[in-house]
Image 1 (tube, protein in one colour):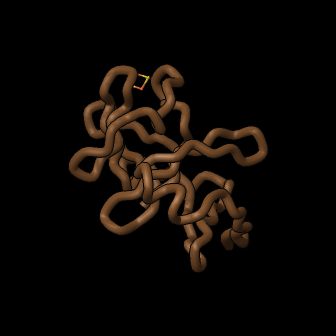
Image 2: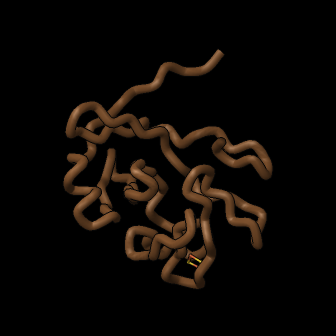
Length: 115
Ligand code: FES
């Protein structure tokens, strides 16, 4: 049985789409929001490698490129193919002009990450 989701409003859609990247904080945890493919994605902002900010990274070919050492995280799952590990991601819900996230990181299951 899964835990019910608790949605937290974190930004407006315009704030994210205007710059394609936005860093917000929820309960002291930094979250990076990205706009790509007409969707909004939410990642833990601090890279699992050495804590660089993914919100300062680059979006390219469906991946977030970390500014630290260019690890490439899949936008849908957070999976980094070369390292075989995952960046935590969060479920996103858009209601009107408001972006909500579930502040509990999505389940990580092996190579599938947070699908
Ligand atoms: S800190 Fe992100 S790849 Fe090294």
